[in-house]
Structures are given as structure tokens and as C-alpha cells.
Length: 408
Image (cartoon, rainbow, N blue to C red; front, side, top):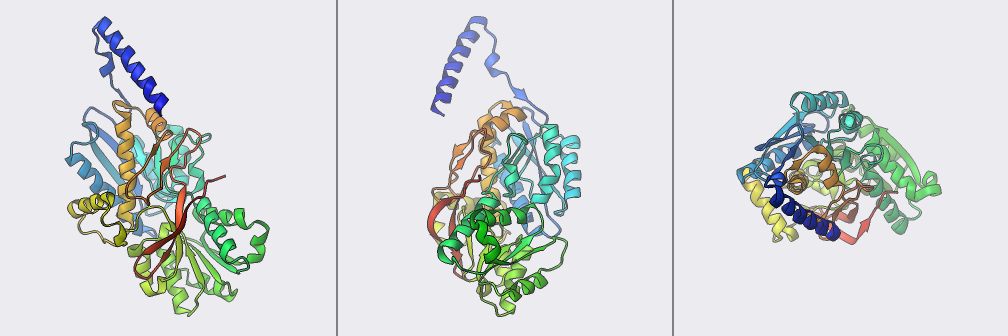
């Protein structure tokens, strides 16, 4: 970054000489792509406001509120954000329809934080063919970090496969002979976790995993799957479900009077969206891994980042459930987008956006201290660190070191 800064300063110096010589304001020249003007940047988004993953809809609503705040404060480099967010009901065909509408009809500059693994997989080829950034995809599937084949797509959160490796390592360290039951969503989201478990358990996988049962997102409940897994009598239950199904599984385990060690994916770690509906008592003792501050944990209340977040929510989205983690997720990714747009300056081309996001190195002060956003032209995984945590019945309690689950 220092060398780049020097080069930039040197370039500015040369530009100044050229301008002085020819008296032409060339340095003020602006570069725009579709969706950008002197006064506006048009940003698209796709979110499941309805359907089986509608619990995530609060993320899109918070993003909308965040950009209202940015606009109230003058926008980004003097340009207002025109945020257009559509519902795809967590249905890939609908995602395709909405992506085409955003790119071809609304003519957005980029699509920001579209949510869902299968949904994003359905539009990935289209976005790359159209050369429109599919930016900070809101899913941790490992396929979003493939700049060689998909240079216009980049993820954000720790990838699922790496997260699963951390759980498998924890199991081997603390319960090396345990019998494991796995419930997983039957798509790239769920399968990435299973692959991550296999990465670490290797030849022990078949012996340790006594039940591995998928579910479809079209199913009303996962009760029968949980009952089937219990029948195999595992000591550890790995819950690879999105919020609705994760909550159902926790509740069903309690109803069965079953008491396995429970490990749950980070995407369902929201106290408000998952653990409350499942029952806080039923959720006590569940293990997961985190990278952003827990909004229900008072230890973060005095930090500058959390104070700023709470002030934003009080003014722009006061009706939101304060125990939900979705709003902070939205706040963090939106903060990153604004940072990227600021760094683009007046060179608001799609190509420049991807150059900027391929060279990020900064912290956001509502993540767990030590978590860093870092990318390179060959590393499209912005966040690769997490810390294990356990639910106390009231909040998530972090323990152990920050672990890097770097993808292979």
C-alpha cells in the first residue's frame, strides 16, 4: 500500500506538471459506467423478503435505512445512493428475473450483497457475462472466491467450508471418539459445510458421522430429519440450517428430551431470529463461531462502533428487534461498500470497483477485535477469521483464540 501511495503521489505530481503546461483541467476528468452520474450511484440488491428465508429480510431493510443515513449526510463523494432492493423469495428462478431487471431495466452500477447460496449461484454466470459486479455476496459458499473464473463476483463473510473445518478441528480436539449426526440444507450452502467436515475428519469421517441427513428448503419442517438423526444416537448434533430450519431443529431436539452437544452454523446465530423462536432455554450451550460483535452482549456497549450502530438504528430503524444480528450484518457490509465507493473517487467504473475490492485491507469496528478485511487479486475471501462461541441462555460468549479457517 505504501508503494502504491508513493506511485499515486508521483502520478499526481506529473499530472500537475502536464496541467500547468497545457492549461487543461485533465485531472478533473471523471470516468463513469452505467448507473453513475455526477449526483447519483444506483445500487441493486436482491433479498428474500418472503419465503422460507424471510428472516433475512431485515438485512435488506437495514441496508435501505443505512443508505438513507448516508444520503442525509451528503452521500458518497457528493453522490446520493439510489438503493433498489427486490424480493426473490429465496427462489433461484426469481433471483434470475430480478437480477436481469436490475441490470437491464434499472441499469444499476452493481448488485450489492444479494443473499442466498442457490440464488447467487443462479446469477453468477450472468453477472460475469454482463461484467457487472456481484459484490459482497451474502453467503459464505466457497464458490464466491474464484477470481480466475468469476472475476466479477466476490463474497464477504467467512466461507462455510472453512467454518466447518474449525468445527471439525474442535470436535477432534475435545471429542475425538464422538458419534456425530449432521443435518444439512441440500444445496451448495449445506454441502460446503459437509465438505469442510470431511477436510478435517478425513478417513475418520465415515466412522464418526453416524447420520447425515439433508432437507429441502421447500419442506415445511425438519422434524422428521431430526428424529431420524436421533435414532442413530449421536453425541454431537451439527445443525447446518438457515434460520427457520435451524430454529425448528433446536426446538425439536428439546421436545425429544435429547441432549447432544450442538454445533450450529454462524448464519443462524441470531438471538432474535433463531434462538428466541427456538426457546432460549433450549438453545443454552449451543456452540458456533463468530466474527462480528453480538448485539445482545453488553460487553460491546461502550465501544465506539457499537455506539455508532445503536445511534443509527435508533434514528433510522427504531422498530427493528434489537436482539437480531441481521441489522449489524447489514450495517457492516454497507460500511464496506461505502468505503469502496469512496476509494473509487471519480473513477466509478465497474472495472475500478473490482480493482479496489481486490486490494482491501482495513478493519470495521463492529467486528470482534482482531478480525480484518483483507483481499488480494488472487484472494477473494474478505473475512477468513472466526472465534468459537457458546450461547449462555442470554448471549454468545466468545472463547479460545481467533482462528483462521483459510480456504485451500
